[in-house]
Length: 361
Image (cartoon, rainbow, N blue to C red; front, side):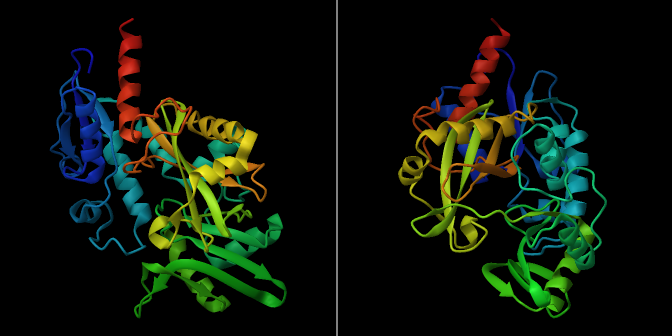
């Protein structure tokens, strides 16, 4: 790329992520990247030339890789995220290559407890969380109840420490008299196993909520305050902001009638123009917070920041920072972001070219 060093991408060949990146290279008039499968990496068969620059992409959407990472090919199963994390991070750390994306950052980004701690230490506004950083493990529902009582929290999100796409997430509200209400996509089967459903459910029996949390706990849990969020057209709203090379370039508004705004759970892309109008002069502040969060991970080429606007859209908190949060097909960069003419992959290719030019200046 603008020099002798070739580019390789570790991902899932044929997947829409790699296809999108390759198309961006083509649009920039650059050679295609060599594609290396996570199957090869996990099988110990991947080799890289000393001159290759290696970009890491998601290992998702491949049942064989899913089985290699967590001993199941069923993407709906919840259990096994801790095993997935250990094997994935070990594989990334074991790559003998010149990496564009640092496994040390990847290890923090895929542990919600560690990520929250890094963000909080850097002064990034985040929801209060009793499990932030290297806190003691949460053993189950009894521990969650105690943490909530000690922190004075009546509404929390309980999340799998190594989960993604809202897998294993519960939005829990408690009230006097032992009342509990949990909203989640998690279901238990007849054998007591857990799986993710595309339909969100509400549980009000503490025994049921406790059983789900107890079953999730062996994979590690993160507990944080459930912050009230702003609304747009009568629906709860947040933003996914992609930061490439330290600069916020693309954003989508996600709206839902549920606490989780993930699109596969019934969330929808909101009216971006309307959100910018509501934000007004606070738009710059929102972007600055996202860039501040991304700066905590300088070894990773791009991240997707989940930004939570408070009611009124004048204050913000960072809910999560996602290593592979750049999959926003067909989305053009917002005005003023420096990537108005292309999608998230075009922005990444442009950032690579800038880095190469600076290195040869």
